[in-house]
Image: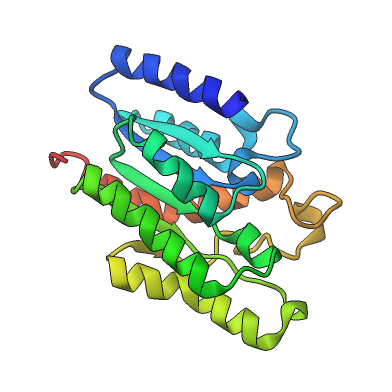
Length: 210
């Protein structure tokens, strides 16, 4: 419900700032900011907005993260998200697929489905795909098949790839909450930096029409 309320509010803001371009961050608890005191401000989408505001760039960031979401969940709700114009999509789903042992073939199909639906509605959208990795305790074969999903989808669909969303954060106790899965506010800052390094070059093209 919190996400729905936020998104409706964002829709109202869109009518006020219609010239702003929109970045939608479609993800799970890592995007939603699970366990943080102030997720809207401390999760990486909110930190991206801070960076954009600091540079006076006319972009709005919408946090479309839902804790526990999978690629199948993202595929189910993406049509609803398309009511909001999307200029850049940062697709950060798949972590929960891996933790649940979902067949990597299914995860890949869902990611492709999300990308195709977004591009059907907004052909000029730019898509950033955030890769994930799984620990070795799930088995070397599964780990390798899972890891291969993201670069394969990025190449097939012409997306910009972030090789590993949790680069420098995953497996680092000091940057994660006690569950060692969800980043602390400091861990989220690291994620925001990783995403920004990929996103910022795309923004150099923001003078071009979508």
